[in-house]
Image (cartoon, rainbow, N blue to C red):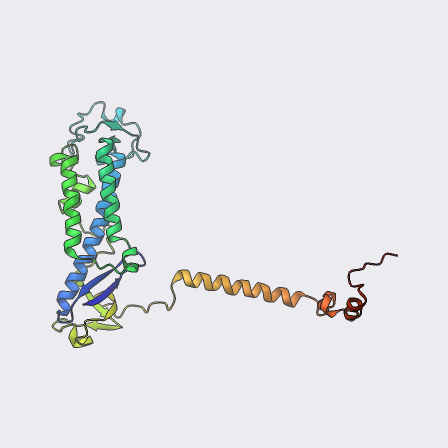
Length: 294
């Protein structure tokens, strides 16, 4: 199988396995789908972790308010300004939220632990370290993890009871995310607006992968997905940032050593023992270690 290493940013990259006979448009669709699923899991893990540690999110009108008793004194808690309903209190513990964006109503410690464990498993599944481990991502793998999170949420909050319509994890699991200019979703990829590049060459629709790189199934390529019409992607640096920093530190150290050598007096070596013209005579007479005082 052909291994493709898709690099979007330094942190957004993954490995994907395909075959030589695949059509270029199908390959682009699969890569975009895997990339977007990966980002969706990342958002789900963060939202699940926030829900487990800080409780459900408040309505938009109450977010950031430290003490909202005065605000809701004359309002019905079930309807605020006639727009959104305050979710019913669910949970056995209460922890204050420093940001005042969430209620702080937590479930049992056992359920909180399960939610945090699944959030960690999700992050490990899509982490950049999978590239170094040579682990390829699959759609089935990520959809299964998404179903696990959905099942866990049904155990923690049956029928999402206790969560508002605005709860991030609920919005993600119900596919109600709004992809507009207001949201920072610059890493998401859309096949109809993107083009696929490998080795500085754009793969055209209507052709197969094998038309460009043959039928050798034991190949590995770095893949770039660009916005259509923007041209070829920029060439990658020959060395990564960590290696670049180490090289700069090494050459800086060598320059400092060279400066010290230039600053030394030219006859400074005369103070060395090997430059003493009487050292041989002193060693033969046994007076090499004798110090004379007058």
